[in-house]
Image (spheres, rainbow, N blue to C red):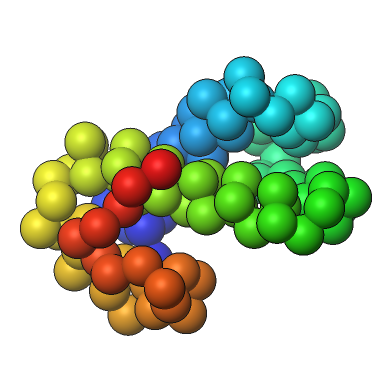
Amino acid sequence: MLSPIIGHNGVAALFYRCVSLRSVDNPWLIAIQTAQGRDSGLPLTELRSALTQQAEPEAATVNRMLLCGFREQLASLIGESLTDRLLRPIWSDICPEQPMQDQTS
């Protein structure tokens, strides 16, 4: 969905940036950054594995922060309006408790 707009590398760059920012407070995320080469796609399996190794409240909080951070990074590149239009169809599935306009971390 986002790749046609910012490219596969753009999506990956946003993902890795969000992981990097969160790894300051959650050092267990560092392993995701080194799990595989950045040219081989997103390390979503590694992310899922790392999240399942954490206590459920911490995993949920970090996952939400990663998603919101991704949204914020995307909005800084393509604007709030386009970001909201692109993410609206899936936002309620990935973050049902949080409206599109309220991405606090």
